[in-house]
Image (cartoon, rainbow, N blue to C red; front, side, top):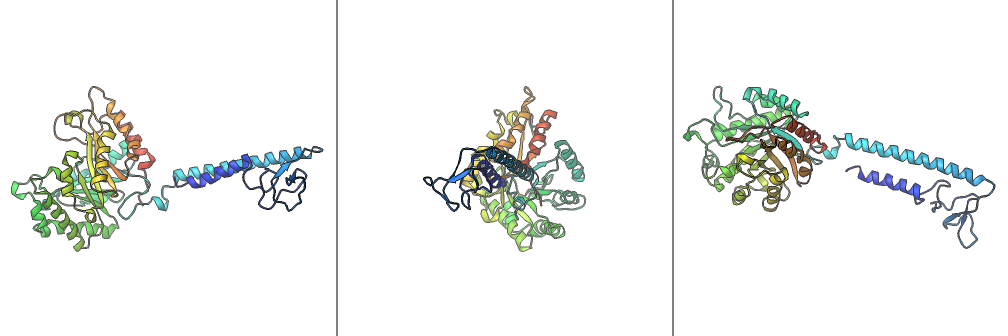
Length: 416
């Protein structure tokens, strides 16, 4: 769209040549010249029968004499053709430039990693800690492009011995981060731990985990930024609306979130893009309002909505049906201008209509472009617990559909 204005100017100039409304440098039109009427036997000033060379009246053709006007007309046609060709060449050059100039200054990501001219494409790729790079590469080969954002999950357990679930920016993540953006989901859990080991929001807010967890991971992120110059998306307790009251009250969540944010700032960590991620279930609307940390604590807002179908015993929902209502609610009730992220999206399969998942993904680009402010879409390529809950891409037809999504220019933005 940034080339629309020059294209309109060229089109207007071309229209002027064809219709005789543009400026002239010779006997091409009967329009007014910027330097007076054209000289020569073909024109006269329409001033009631008299007119001199300095008249500015509109010229009009006289009746041809002795064949010379025909030659003049031929010259005019040749000149017109040359102008048209030049204009067409210019139009094609601009069109080609618009298709390939993905590194223009205006489309480079902002300080908060927001792509001004489109949206990022990312994914959660199931993996073990040690094979993240291999799994990301395999997914990218399957989808036909490099991911912009790679999504990983961590708990708040202590990094002791071989346990690495609580270690943000593992060596594998750092290697993947060399040519990807990273979204780190940090959950107030100790996976596989005892009930007493599970962190609670009140403890986090009180600073009880600062020395053992918060400060340690803050320093890792800070070191990463100083060494690489890179920022990371960081989400604290995604889908927190499903974790109350077990982890604490909504007010305690806000206090815990703000404490982590402020602690990072005190420690000089300035390479975090703070990302607040909810489920998007609108019957949790009051919880969302009560658990929003505030605009000054949040850079991006994400939500996770799927076509669960038989997994949640619902009707089949189109991509638009899964996304639009939550998008509108967030804009009306939480933030009118924060960049938004479809932090997890995907679809179950319909065993009675196998092509349905492919058709579902085919709807993504046109709908996504109409979701104002949505600047990232991350496909969930895994299963949820329970029967009929495999949300991974199911077959080659669905992969082909997702490849077309991933190839859309809107989802291919310059990352630098």
